[in-house]
Length: 425
Ligand code: HGY
Ligand code: MN
Ligand code: MN
Ligand code: MN
Image 1 (cartoon, rainbow, N blue to C red):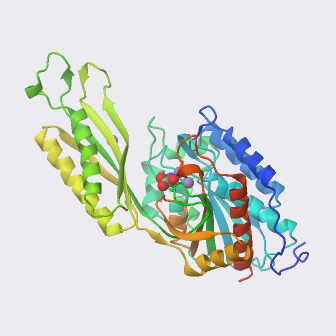
Image 2 (image 1 turned 120 degrees about the vertical axis):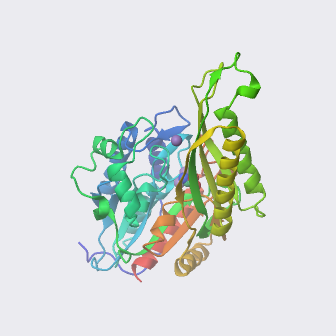
């Protein structure tokens, strides 16, 4: 009954920390690698089970659930002015290989619990509150980061690619993979996934910091500018014994030299804020006694300054060309997969989070997010805010990832009260 409860801000906020911790533990069992690691790849069987688990929790919280063509999942609590743009919050549950159980998950389970906290307090939202599970934040399967939120933010290029060209490492198309998981049923073009800006009055994301700075909460003021590049080199290969060194054009050494060039260009950028990683480096045929005839590397480089990051990308490209020439291998691919601008958090949401933290006597600090998040793209269609909770020694993207349930509960409280305030705006 939309008229029960009060539309004044809740005074008591009780987070059910035990059930939230239990849910985090249960969700982590939907994994393709043994505990304590978590591996949950887009549209895999484990991903489908995890989605079902989240949809069930949304249902138990009385949220109405809808899913879009690519598997973004929305759980909605109608406010008493359901026609107004809603306030949304959410994150992701896909997990890169051998990672941890908190990255993304805290912002989905925590968001559902935040709505439960408000329901328990008798709060009645004016603007509807919506929890979003973004279909895939990690680039693992298709090499596209923030696939779901990028699409919601209206990327026509991505909509085209997903329909026509995107395939994974086993040459399975995005469309077939999505259909396997029960999505992309119709022949619909994906533009019906796009949300127009104004759809939400605010978007907030609760997430672990994934870095070593925080002892308490972090309120994010900006999200760094990410980019990723795919590179292939090709040489003649040959017999590791019979081919003498002067006659070789070793694609593996070209890749190794480029990886070191990435490190050099990043260190020479003039700022500690520029980072670069070669997380994927594959050699073909991958036999000890065969000179690599092909190599494939994937480069991740980021900076809080977009121009400086783009200069590094340009230098990496020049190095790839120079190395190919020097080693007489061919540079068969140099593809910038994404080269995104940074995002700035909405000042009024930052202020709402600061005020809420003060009201709850929770220490907090302003900071930049060096990791990217779905918020980076939601900021294109809605005022955005992010709330970080500390994680043990900043460990993330590895099984040792850990966040204390008290810190999670504090984050959920700040999220809940900030959502309530924004809902009454
Ligand atoms: O890589 C990132 O920044 C995010 O955690 N996927
Ligand atoms: Mn991640
Ligand atoms: Mn994440
Ligand atoms: Mn390639």
